[in-house]
Image 1 (cartoon, rainbow, N blue to C red):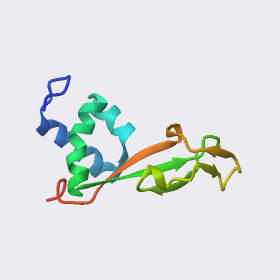
Image 2 (image 1 turned 60 degrees about the vertical axis):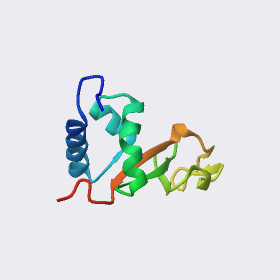
Image 3 (image 1 turned 90 degrees about the vertical axis):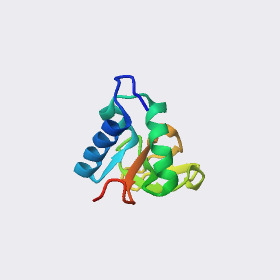
Image 4 (image 1 turned 90 degrees about the horizontal axis):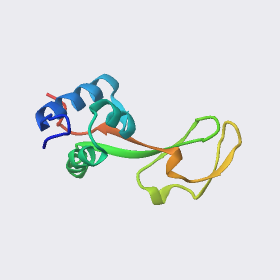
Length: 112
């Protein structure tokens, strides 16, 4: 796989490994910004790892007013359609604008 900057899979793999090892967990948005490739290229790279169980992805819901973490969900359908922040009391409908995809290593891909 070649990225727009001419990076190959090995250098992309190394960069992702380094980022996740430093942080333990990273959001898709942060990873996308750090590796400087297109959304589609990063998705193409991560989807097989998600399928193998090497990386786990979860959806984290945040309050649009105060930014409080309101929970983590495996699937979009598990998120309530209406939410209320336990910190500031703000009520709001579920929206992709208030979600982050959190990625965490679960398998051997980055270890050993």
